[in-house]
Length: 328
Ligand code: PEP
Ligand code: MG
Image 1 (spheres, rainbow, N blue to C red):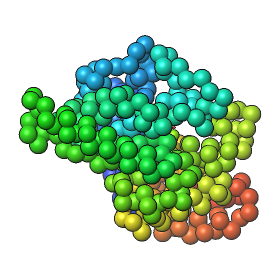
Image 2: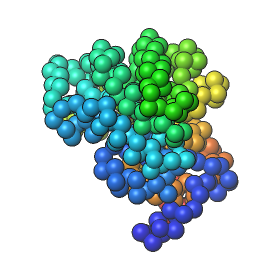
Image 3: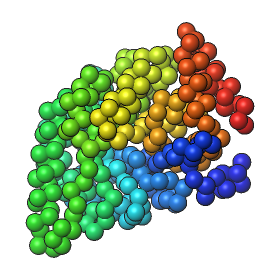
Image 4: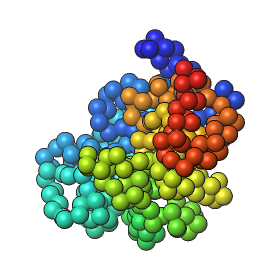
């Protein structure tokens, strides 16, 4: 298999009927391995910036953060790198910033926390911008957005961070490009605000892990309810279809960065729906590229219609499972 993947590594990610697919990396952990994947991936679709924060015993300074971000941006020069702002809270705790809550997944998480602590947020935004000087590949993404005022407030802070860093004496005039700004679609309330969200941001990325958790009210980390945590639940499928349809309607670039994109049946379903940009852990990227190269989108659209005619999720998955088997 590894020989097969070594060949696939150099091939383009394109379906048999010529549809080009972008395969990006979810990064944050073991950055060196991920950098080694550079030539196989089309960039970084999700850099989980909280992970380096979690591995320390105090908040990293702006310069420490900037050095880390610069390393990632330069190693992917010429390819897009999407950095997500700090997404702590929920299951991701910082040892030096404990948050004690009864319902952490419904509490002070992601953008909610960083907007309440603009000093933390601004330092991080400035570090990202500083790191991007002279390299044109940074985009910034906001986690856990549930209402549009959060986007507006984050945009104001990004404007301020950009103005302040750009005006520093050591920074070349026009050295820092204003980055594109996007949001994770992972809180279900956004599903009902997509028309209003579209003009506020440059791109969307669907976090299927949390979107599934919040749509189904099933804790993504609780083994006791693991059998009802299902990213292919009919309600999740409908949400995903609605997002891609709206992305087309409003001409908004959209990607998937939840685990579903790295799962064989998941990626086939997403291809059938119309998604073309997927971000995943490096352990999945070769396998998914191989599957993409064995598939035809025109066939998958028919397979999807057939699968939808089945009432049960098991049968739905079975139809895609057979498609996979037939293609080795
Ligand atoms: C998600 O929620 O799908 C996602 C990609 O973010 P995280 O897993 O880091 O919460
Ligand atoms: Mg998430």
